[in-house]
Image (cartoon, rainbow, N blue to C red; front, side):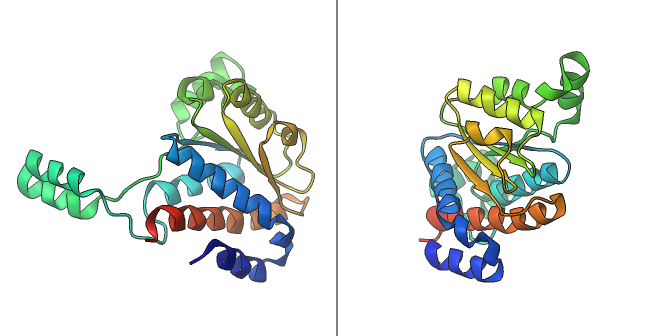
Length: 213
């Protein structure tokens, strides 16, 4: 499905997103560019936005709606290494788009919170994981979460591009975002209701690029 038709369909169901069409498209194109350069996504959020970060990782690291076959050379390599089991792996495993949720490692996040500063829980991970070809996605309903703002600042210092997914104002983090998708709501629950279709739309646009051939 062409991306403009996909956006039309989603905006028909969620008219509030209509004014964000170009920003959503820009975000998807930025992620595609990241993957084309061999980069990965670093994604962070708090509370419900942390769950959204985990959700986005799940949709990227395995198939969402499109079939993602492995390259034949890799399938053959699996078979050469382990015969019958390698053939099974080749049939079941899927191509993956690398993404990390920065709130998913509780040992690490609690260590940073206890030993350094809770507001640096994401920024510290960007120091460890981040490379110039990577991309940070910060999800915050207010745009003012200090740990997300600090992550954006740290990413920019490493020449990592930043996509912000926020509520209406964009908050403090908007000044550090290369692309800001600020859905037109201010109440947390209403913002989060619109974040999910945005994230799904972006996932589908990425899959259309890499796998719908």
